[in-house]
Image 1 (tube, rainbow over the protein chains, first blue to last red):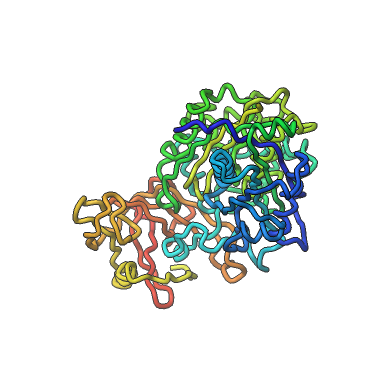
Image 2 (cartoon, rainbow over the protein chains, first blue to last red):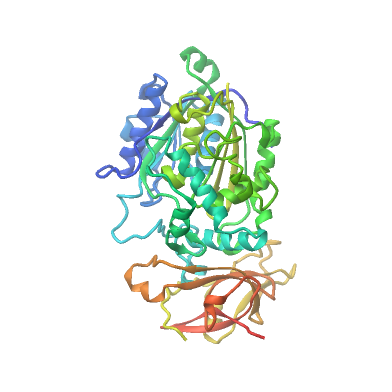
Length: 387
Length: 137
């Protein structure tokens, strides 16, 4: 696995408000995130010649990078749309930007995702109901499978069986994540959560309850990259993608391998090896948390504990604010907002720049970001580093 | 048998024999004539070796439950409220492949991982669907 070359660096970050943004469409939300990111590093649209984005899931579009480029007034020399799944899309956008900058296809690139998934959905839509999301409708719909939660419920039930885990393990990460969200003024969830609140929330797909599910939301996030020499000239704080690895094993839930063979383990090992570090070196981890079970599986796979040990690991306080390796310091998809995982990357960069306010992890130098598209179909792990 | 609602498949030329098999109460799997891999769902090429020399093979229709979930909310609006809770299952067929299906029949609420199940063809409008029920020895 090649080490990501260290020339291109992340110099700017942007984030729109999250929650309900009525009256804004996905192009406008992405444009707001781009402008916010450019402001953070003292650049303007005149400096941007690379644009990488993802089109909205709730209302799929084609050629969305060109749509956004025209809306912003850009005429980029490198422009593309990336769609490989939750948070891995954001990492792959960064990877594309790094390659494009290092090979001279552009000088300064913006990676952006955002949409009005909450207020822009068709009337009567329940949950994150996405037509053709996993392309397996002929082998799923006739049996009544719809929405992402039922797939993660099948995974959670098996996780319980394999490791003797139970809903208190799911509750532990829900509560830890909420504690972080209470330190983030932009988070949608503003009230403390107890294990009892979790246990009393209604069943969506057993064993997953309402408080095991992430928050469908409007909002967007963006990151700006440029070459290190240009970054130094601008005097911008620099964050480098030190390594990135992905592994695809399947697409639909019926083709999912056993839990210990999911791609997260291999992607994590490759990302650690390429960066020359291990889990004990991390200052924080931003782990894709569309559902609580995702975090348990990821904590196990990334070597924070033995397989099946995630619940006990979380109960040591390691993942909570002030813990050994805080997880999802912005409140994650569970308690801040589900913006496709883009805000996991924005948060990691914000922390590494020392700009995270009340929730700042002291002297943060190394952050891990994990993602999984579909039902752990495509897994990705990246290590970000303060330069 | 409970009152079933289903969204019927739109078969392709490649997959039509599978759904026609269901209407004859046969669960058909694809078997590779080059590497002997048995797979589900049907595809034009063997996912193990890439061969296009494929045959249809009738499954014995028995398997072991890999996982399940009781769906507690309707993702299809109010018309599906009558189905709640229904049960989705992943079944490891004795013939090899794992398939997603729906559990029907008695003791659905007592289902557990490892239960033995067998295929149960349930007719909805024009199509019999390969659902499963628990086998009690």
